Each structure stands twice: as structure tokens, then as C-alpha cells.
Amino acid sequence: MGIRYYAYAFEKDQTDQALANPRAFIAADPLADAWGFEPHASVATVTFEQAVPMRDLLYLDKAWPDLQSLTGATSSDGRPRPAFRMFEGEVTMCDGGWHPWVRALTPEEVVEVADDLAALEHEIASVGLVPGGADGEDEDYLLHFLRRARTFVQCLAAEGRGMAYLIG
Image 1 (cartoon, helix red, strand yellow):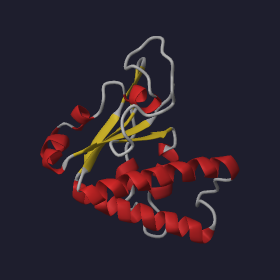
Image 2 (tube, one colour):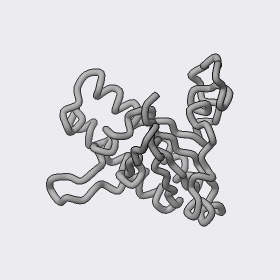
Image 3 (spheres, helix red, strand yellow):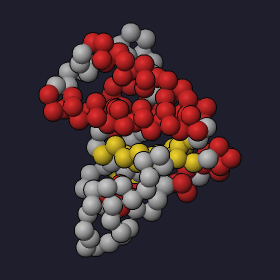
Image 4 (cartoon, helix red, strand yellow):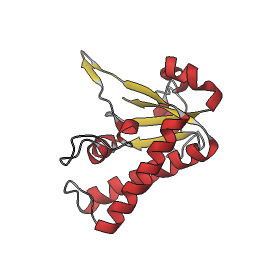
């Protein structure tokens, strides 16, 4: 199925718990939540409609490495953008698959990420293309998920919520 990205929101008063154990805030079967089928079903009818409200779950499919590259270290100063914190991480490959990367972002970090994603989207709109050479369908795919990420974190920031994410 491939390595995918999922982020779940949590309330501000759950921040210490999320930082201590971000995996506790991720569903046991996040793909089921994202694609709208019963968790752990061996045979299911997929609706492709999120089972969890959009304000509580962000699904970025397999766009995370491109978003990671887009927000990662720049050649000008070697530092990643603040939004990189939302996409940072790599799975650990092992026999039979991989171990996911899991992290939590505090409500304060979410505000920084939201501001930076809005700035990044504005920069892309001004330039007219995605840095890094994406074109056509690849660019549309990336921009679609960049907008979804921006919308999600802007809502979290407005509500004072944090997020836990999983790449896996």
C-alpha cells in the first residue's frame, strides 16, 4: 500500500500527553479513517470519504516526501522552513515492512506551521510554480495536498489545538 501521512488533532489540555505518547492520538487503522471503511477489515467497501471529520484528521496520502522537500533545508541558509516540522521524519525500514515515524506538535508550533504554510502558498502563487521542478499532474497533486495541510493547521491554530502525526 505504501507509506502515507496522517495527522490527528488534539485539544490544548492534552498537549503533555501527546508529547509523551503521540501514538496514543493516532487511530489503530488510520487508512480506514481516511478512506472510509471499517478498521482492520480484510474485505471492505471503500467510500473514499473520511470517517473522521476534516477538522480532526489530515490525510496527505503519499505527498509527504514532496512536502518534506518543499519545506526542507534551502540552499540559501541550510535551514528548513518552520512548516518542515509538520512533515519531518522518516520511517525505519525493517524485515517485513517499516516502523512509522510519529510526532506531536504543540498548539504553539501549529501556529508557526500555519503561518509558514500560508506564506509558502502565497510564494508559490506569486512565482507560479512549485520550486524543485514539479510540473503538470505532479504539481497539481502537491498543491492539492499543500492546501489541505494549510487549511487543517489554520483551523487547528484558530482553535488552539495541537496535532500528532504519523508517517507510515
